[in-house]
Amino acid sequence: MCTNSPCRHHFLTTHPYRASAVRSIRRSGKLAYTALLALLIGFSGLHLFGQDPQEMRQGTETSLSVASAAESAATTSEAKPGITATARVRSSGRPVSPGTVLFCDADAPFCLDGAVVGKAQLASDGTAVLHLSPGTLARHHNLRAIFVGTNTHSTSVSGVSPFTVPDPPYPSTTLLAASGTPSNYTLTATVQGGAYSDASIPPGQVSIVDTTSSQTLGMLTLNAGKEVVTYAPRFDAGATDASPVAMVLADFNGDGLTDVATANAGAHYVTVLLSDGSGDVNSVSPALTPGSKPTSIAAGDFNGDGKMDLVVNNSTGTGVTVYLGNGDGTFSAGLTPPSTLALPTAVAVGDFNGDGNLDIAIAGSNRVEILLGKGNGTFVAVGSMASVSGPVSLAAADLNGDHIDDLAVGAAGTHTVDILLSNGNGTFRLAQSLGKFATPKSIVSGDFNGDGKPDLNVIDSTGNTLTTLLNNGSGIFHQSSIWNTGTAPSSMLAADLNSDGNLDLAVTISGLNKVLLMYGTGKGQFHLGGIPHHQFSTISHRHRLFSWSREL
Image (cartoon, rainbow, N blue to C red; front, side, top):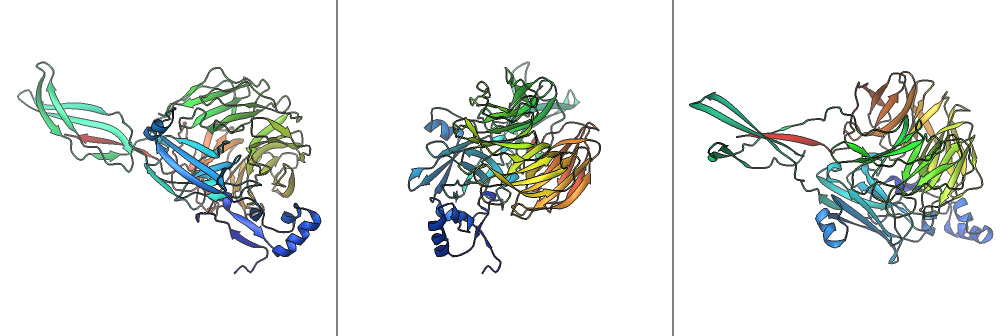
């Protein structure tokens, strides 16, 4: 029995699964009393006086199907590589749209951070499709789909869909060595290749052939072999235009691989770099030209067609530029939503009014402006803007568990991080102003202590610190740790860098021209991983390849 007021419950639909999108819902008061108040003050009064908004929404059911590339090609006209996951959301048998579906690792306790395999917007037929590359997945996987809900439709969770990623045809290399004398010699053949870390080393035979006479000297079976974990050496990936200052990762051409888009302030361009599956990326021509010094970039499906789109700020002009994706890595001509915000400094993407369509938040000129998405790639500006003194950074996440995204804003004017909780209509209320940061240059959200609630990490680029702020679940934060980073930290990325299941940080230190690695303990703390003198590639959570070698 709940003894605290208001009671707090984990809301689980269809299947018991804890996830950030279905985390907790407030409930208080009696239904009869709430209904009476509703008659007096209208429908909007239900939420104000404690009625659970989930009970007022239409119920939904989410199902999930997973198909291999061969299965996809047999049922559709367009073959996609790897794995295709399709979620279907229905309400009373009718398709639900718009909305967002998270595709999650079902073995994880929360659908956050590394447990989110991907997410997609619902199309008009109530389906959300995610293409996955075998190289980005563990060989064996349990997948679950979560419809995060909207103002009109409740959250629902699919069952678990287990699948095995088939071994691709990895290339192999055969080496031949000779020892001994011409009349008494030994030939040793070694075959090397790659495989998933839980795959068995394939069997095989090797023929020894005299190339002069074409005579087969012998055919022998390879021995059991051994596993050797190897890591790729440093290499420079795709080139961008001048002064890349921000980037976003997403699959821009639907091949299941993670691509990169960079905002290049020096060249006033946006460069799109497509992954080739081997760790390298190649630029797409021509570059996108918003033309006003882009310094911030974000991605999302703004028109519900299953293709990733881009938004960048116009830091020396007004508002933002939106590029709708064509699904092949190219984009349509830039669109200019109706923004009046001058000298914007940062952009973020989220659903700020709970209608299932992705919206855009823009910071700049002592305000935060919200552009509400219509679901077709166009936007309408919210008349009321939140006042923030000198905003320089943004992070969007559901900070209080009401299924609507909120904002954390780095305010250089007041030297604080302001927590803005959504009112559900594209406007916000200030819940908390945190700390004293000389210049809160960068903010990332993620679950850094494993409780299923999004926390924050903040870079102070002038104070040379990294601060961790832990969330109590209602959008109220307290400081967990503070680190001295070295001169002029500028940006950071949150990911599980060492595959231990905890969220880590990679922090760029501009004053030292280095990257600082901070390994998370899973309890809101970090230990120093060192400052590498080279570039590095992020290894996805629990997804690693090994090389194998065998001899005759």
